[in-house]
Image (cartoon, rainbow, N blue to C red; front, side, top):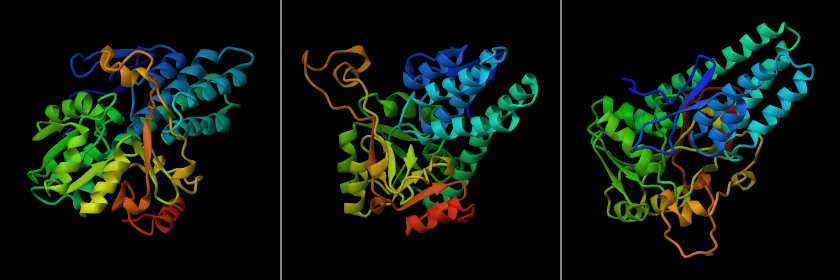
Length: 350
């Protein structure tokens, strides 16, 4: 079973993105003609979700190479464009991972004729996109094993096809369980302040016809306390070498409540989201976004003029609160540092 929509697609020398800023009331395509359009799309959250950001950035790198291909100072302009793209959003490690992969391809092929170099960069971007879809399907298969029949699942933010090149991470596991006839039910947090849960996850759940309800973020604690939730499954934007997970703001609070009431808590991420270079979540940069996201959600003023705002986009969940991290190479379980090191060495946890 596949989606009836395509989150991102490179076609006729343009990158076409579903504009996630206007869902669910409007379905619109945002067209990127240049790498600067790609940077804007990532920064302004036309596209969001760590894997989708990575795949989008890969096409941005290719578009930069194509734009500067005939210039004498091609390499300097190309690398400056890559650095510009890398600054679009600081927390999601897939952004840097995808750009670094594209730069590696460039370094290996930079002495080839320019057309061959461009073809290799385009192929690498296409591969990043197709590999992400295949990875998500595999994570769905592996993660399905932790979902019991008749489970009631809570999820946070958006981790579906809209957050990836297709199928999804945590929502991909949920969809796999649904199509496996496990008779699941899903509660989706609205996910303030940008409402990715109510705007995007609810839309995807309805597209897939999965039985579900949307809840205010603050209702999750009551449902967990009252034994209404069998497990929590959500995504991740960066995983440290010790298993700490940076994810959408509100994830840490959910993990604390789940630990208190013994509810399994899973993060679903591709191995590319693991930052093996950082020892713990304390080293993860946390993006702060504009105060208007809080004071004027959807353009409607809900706070007095001049009110100061703290608006971190992510928080870090310590590995001690996590039951398992589901990847395409198996489920990482404690001891996290040991098992993440195994993945770094190329081993499988299956």
